[in-house]
Length: 298
Figure 1: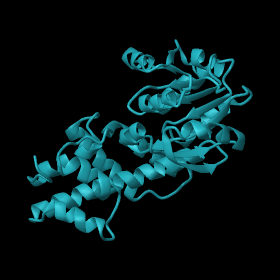
Figure 2 (figure 1 turned 135 degrees about the horizontal axis):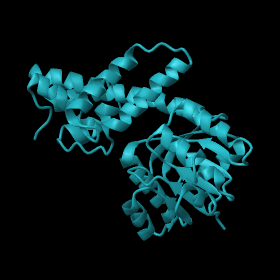
Figure 3 (figure 1 turned 120 degrees about the vertical axis):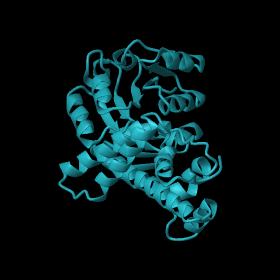
C-alpha cells in the first residue's frame, strides 16, 4: 500500500506532475492559492487541503513546485507551513529556488524529523505533460531512493547530483544559463541571417548538422518560432528569475560571470518588449522589430 502524497503548487508544471501521480494510482492531497487549479486537481481525483500544514498533516511525502524562493520559504517554514505537519517525513522541492534558499530551508527543518530532497526539474511544461522531465536530486540516500519511483511518474532522466541540499539547485541554474544562452544566440543569428537574405529553415538545417547544434536549434525554434506558434509553455519572468539565481550562485562561490550578465540583459530587453508572461520563444520578436524582418512564416 502506497503512502499518501502531497503536492503544493498547481501551476503550469505542478498540475501535470500531480496528474501523473494520480494516474499512477497514488492518493494525492493538494494545495494552491488558485481555487480553479485546486478544483481541476480535485476533478482528476485529488484530495484538497486548506494549507501547507494541512497537507503535511495528512501526507508522509510532500512535493512542491512554486515560482519564487520566498514562496518556498513560506510554504515550508512560514505560518501554517509544511514543517508543522505531524505526518510529513520527506519534503521534495521541485522548484528552482537557488542554492542559498535551499540551504536556508534545510537548516529550518533541522530537528523536525523532516528530510529535504532538493530536486529541481527541467524540460518545461511540454516535458511535464509528457512525463519526460529531467530531474536533478540532492539529499540523503534513503530519502532520494524512496522518492525516486514517484519522480519517475513524471521524470524520464533522473540525476543524483549529491547528498547536500543546494547542490541540485546549482546544477539547475547552470543548466538554465546554458539553455537560455542557446535560445538568445539562436534568435540573434537567425535574425541576422534573414536580414542578410538567408532562409531560416535552411539555417536551422545547417546548424543541426554542424557544430552549432543546440537545444534551441533542435526543438525550440523549429517547433515554436519558424511556424510562429510561440507555444513552448514557458515564460520570460520565470527564466529571468532563474538566470538571476544563477548569478547569485556564482557570486556566492566567487566564480567569474562574464557572459551571464549579458544574457540577463538580453532577456530583460525581450521581457520589456514582450511582457512578463510572454512565451520564451518570443525572444526573437524584439530582435525582429529592430531588424525589420520576420523569422519564419506568419
